[in-house]
Structures are given as structure tokens and as C-alpha cells.
Image (tube, rainbow, N blue to C red; front, side):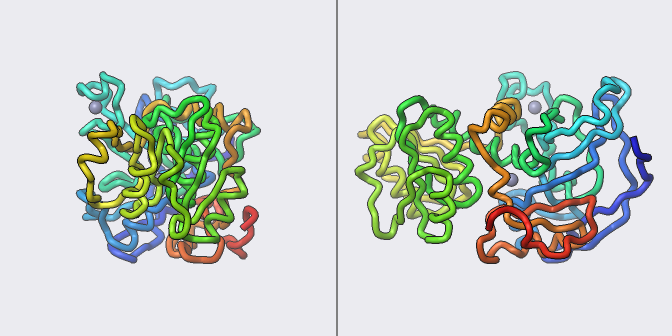
Amino acid sequence: MSEIPTTMTASVLRGIEDLVLEDRPVPSPAPDEVLVQVLSVGVCGSDVHYYTHGRIGPYVVESPLVLGHEASGRIVAVGADVDAARIGQRVAIEPQRPCRVCELCRAGAYNLCPAMEFYATPPIDGAFCEYVLIQDDFAYEVPDSISDHAAALMEPLSVGIAAAQKGGIKVGDTVLVAGGGPIGIIAAQVARAFGAVDVVVSDINPARRELAAGYGVRVLDPATESTEQLGAHVFIDASGAVPAIVNGIRSVRSGGTVVLVGSADEIPLSVPEIAMREVNVTGTFRYTNTWPIARALLATGQVELDSLVTHEYGIEQVEEALTGEGSAGSLKRIVLPGVRRVAEPELAGRA
Ligand SMILES: [Zn+2]
Ligand SMILES: [Zn+2]
């Protein structure tokens, strides 16, 4: 095991569009924690949102914050109560710390824990840095067949799994997914793994439709093609676009389920359309107990994430990683905290 340094480089958000590199002490694990050397971190829409707006709903960046919550790495030290044999393991991080004792935690809905501490959600630091701490049982060992990137992307994969679970997707279902971004493509792959036989991704952006089509799902343009005749059992919104949600509600069959994953503010809800057709409308907030499922889906090849990665960046290039949103063919951008700079960020994936 290589020596653990006393300080590390962290990318720190000080305010809107104000990102700096800082030297910070490498933290030491509490008795129930492991110290993970971070190898790969996905850039999420929420990271971009904090960078450009300084807040998401009630969460406001009021003090310096390290972004990044889709992380994988290698355990380099363990707390006093953790098996030292874990040192050296490659792990995927479930980036949350519930209280474990409140009513919701005890009911199993720990994602709704009011005392939740979640990476990169103010005031809790995330993983755009070289080392992070996580409780032992939220660091999931991954086999060699799962890459560092795919292990990091088990976080958005977990979002897709939670949506499929909440939608109750079962064998034979037709599933409509709005939005051909990373979450939409992941949700579509998960829907198929859950047994859906007809998975349709709708997106107004032709480039995104083309990317989504590469994953063996049907794609359509909601501007020119109606989805109302689909009679979907489940609709998953991964677009956050109000017209897509309204359209999705109309596209599920009577008794079907609408799962809102995207973050639209408000939608006009037709009570007759919901009530008279007994449509279930629900949301998802993060996930619970999804990492073992994510690992199994990846290990068996039922879900594939490496091809989502289009760009890699070093720790000095987090700002580029966050602002590269509109860059052509960009799907999933990854920060490598152990690397200073990647010479040519457009080197990864298949773009
Ligand atoms: Zn995310
Ligand atoms: Zn709790």
C-alpha cells in the first residue's frame, strides 16, 4: 500500500461560478468509516446547477463546498471497527449518510431521512478531491469486470433502479422514458433489465435520440410523433420538461404509473385524467439499497455504462468538466481526481 499523504487537492466551489483548487488535510476515518482514494467521479446535472446557480431548491451553497457525488475509488485506510482486509478493495460509493435511527430510516426509507448527509449537498463535501470518507457498509466492493467509471456511475444507475422499482416495472411491460440524457438512457436500460419488452425513449434533440437508439431501445421525436397510443404501463420522466410530463401522463394506460425523476418545478395536473383512469403519479428521491442491484446488473452485462462516458478531465479541469454541458456529443463527463490535467478531454468513450 502506498503511503497516504497528509494533504490532498480538492476542487472547491466558493460561490456562483467561483471554483478554486485547495490543499486540504486528508481526513482520517471514524471507527465505522473507510478512507477511499477517489479514482473516478461523474459530473451530474446537480453539480452543474450548484456551480451556475449556487442552489437547488432549499439547498443553498453558503460556505465552500466540494461538488461531485458519483464516485468510485480504492480503500486505503479503515476505521477501528472496520475489517482491515478491506484495504486495497476497489469500491463504488453510495454517497449518503442517513441517521439510521429515525422513523423513516427504521422503515427502510432512509433516502427520506431528515438528517441525511449527502455528498455535494450543502454543507456536506463531495468527491471532486483525492480522498473521501464513507461509512463501511456504503462502500461496495466491485469486481475487476466493472471499470472505475462504471463503478462511479452506479450512482445514476441507482436513480434508474429506484425509478423502475417505484414504477413497478414487470415482465412484458411497455415503458416510456422522456429524456435521452444519461438518466434517461440508464432508466431505459434498467427498464429492459426489469423485463419491459417495449422501451421507448422520447427526446426532441435528434443527437440524443441517436445516442439512445444505440442502446437498443425505440426512440421517437415528441414534436412530431404522439405517444398517447402507446398505452405504456409505466412512464418515467427523466427530462424535467413540463410538456413531456403532461404528455407522459396521457401516454400511460389506465391504472398505469407515472414516475417523476426529473426536476420540473410545477406541472398542470388534470384531475379527471388522473382520477378517472386511476393513474398513479409518484416521484423518486435518490434511492435505497440499490448498489447491490446495480453491481449485479453491471456484472451480468444487463446494463452497460462505460459507453456513456464521452469526456475525462483532471482535478485542475473541474470547471471545464462542469461547463462542457453543451459540447457536441457530450453525454457523461468524468473527473479523475488523481490526475492533474487530461491533455485532450475528448478522448474517452465513443462520442
Ligand atoms: Zn447525480
Ligand atoms: Zn434517519
